[in-house]
Image (cartoon, rainbow, N blue to C red; front, top):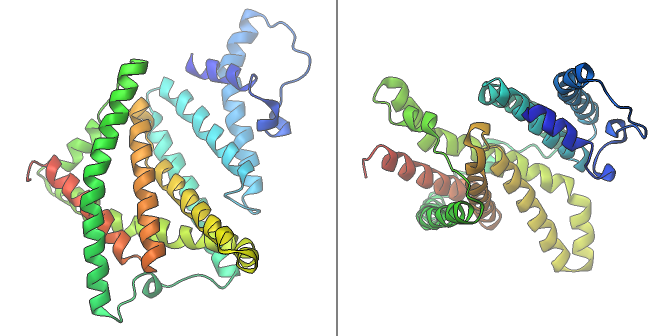
Length: 307
């Protein structure tokens, strides 16, 4: 069983990479066949419970700490593998992702409010200078067109590499494609959300609040960097962009996509980094939002064979 294999795998991991509460005992007695079967069924679920408890207990400290991210990674790994066996991995994964997103959003907002750094939508999307807004939108559209082509080439290259060297079978997301190509009202609404709604909401969440969260979290380091040299200030900005982009890429993972997640996550993470750079350069979300919307809109139109 997948769950049993992963349960055994966890005991062979470097002890220093796991919390102490999850380390195996020094002495392991030989189990009977019945006990082995029981362990294969129960042990993975116990790991999920333990990882969940540890994650929840540490959330008030810092949701994005290394300890939390390690627990979160194994929680997703175990739950996806276990429920894949029962054929409901996608449902469980999406529910779990939703719960994690809510807890993360709560932590981000509280952190920003505690530091008097919770921005308004007007700060994300200022409307005082119309000409600058138009220029930023045009810049975003231009970057969207360029990165759309570049991301398509990169995804194909990575996919070809995986297929050729590892003989991996990559799958298409037929569920999403079916939704976006549906001619009914629901399909039209999904297309509108993918082209316009998702770019707006995701940019506000990731390049907006989450980006500002990491900025607030690294304020002390940035102040120290300013007193020393600009190189350290630049390093802090790079760290902020990398963290935001990796979380943005991870949010697009899907257990039913299998190995196809690799090229998709790499491409989306790099595009997230590009949109974060636009945010850093322009100071607001007009350009990254336009870039995101351009990419999604053309993808939807291509999928529906309109262009």
